[in-house]
Amino acid sequence: MPLVQRLLGAALAVLFLLAVLVFASIVFAILVAGGLAVWAWLWWRSRSLPRGRRTVEGEYRDVTDREPLEDRRRDRL
Image 1 (cartoon, rainbow, N blue to C red):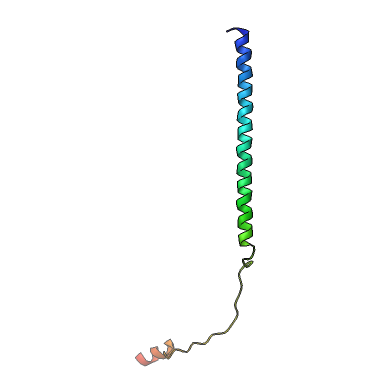
Image 2 (tube, rainbow, N blue to C red):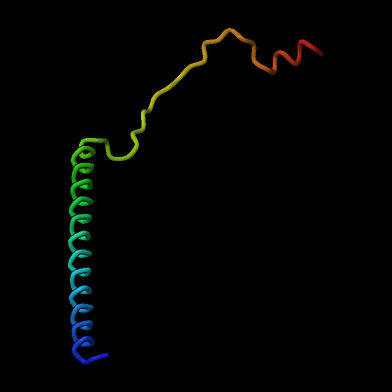
């Protein structure tokens, strides 16, 4: 192979490598910008949601007319 072909091939290989790196960096920048936009939108939508669980305190009373289990056992014996 002549020396000119080798030098031309090496130069084209370096140019191709640089073009691939530029393209990859552009794609990476677009993906980062898109991810940042999605994160910002989700943050904006969820900023008014409550932080953590809320506990509701209160009392309750059983108002059913059933007999307690203890009384049912005594009736059967």
